[in-house]
Amino acid sequence: MYTVIGLPMTRTLRVLWALEEMGQDFEVKPFLPGSDEVREISPLGKVPVLIDGDLVLPDSMAILCHLGDKHGQILGAPGTPERALQNAMCMRLMDELDALLWTNSRHKFILPKDQRVPDISPAIEWELNRNVDRLFSQVDTPFLTGDSFSVADIIFTHCVGWAKNVNIPIANRAALDHAKAMRARPAFQRVVELAK
Image 1 (cartoon, rainbow, N blue to C red):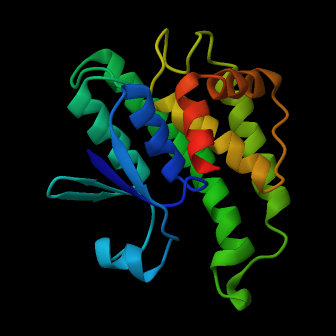
Image 2 (cartoon, one colour):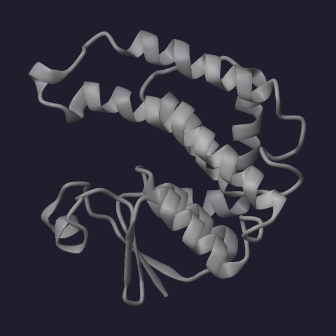
Image 3 (cartoon, rainbow, N blue to C red):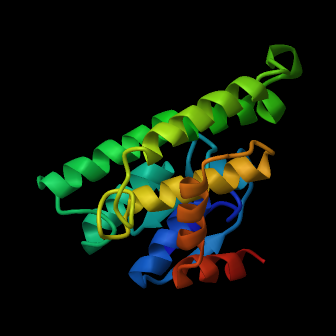
């Protein structure tokens, strides 16, 4: 059984969703980022953290890759063209969506007040929408990297929800429809119930 450290409303949701998709047993310790409980497990203080036996692994992307490789699901086999394309998409999403949303959050409530840029949200909204439009001008498959659900769909859908939660509207209809279809998956719905 896996132990997942972090509140489901954070990037921890990505890990919980992946575990549900793969039918793996897990327990959740819903500790806040930066809390003493998290720092005891991972000095970074960030969530999620996955405990897999003796392995203590922080960072949602690293965790998703570990789980995908370990269970042969949600990722193509290492060394295959399918996996290379999935890696490229995941890195693109982390760079072009996740990083923008993280920057926005840092300037809203994480950085010391005197280090924040208070009017950053319009620039973030513009760039995020530009990146989503470019992405969906290139996607013509049921899932972001082909005909199978993958880590990329988890990352993208989480970012769409994150944007909504911080009042950054995404205008691209295809992107919103994709996220809606992913949120309808039974595994995602189980995570939503878990988070209540």
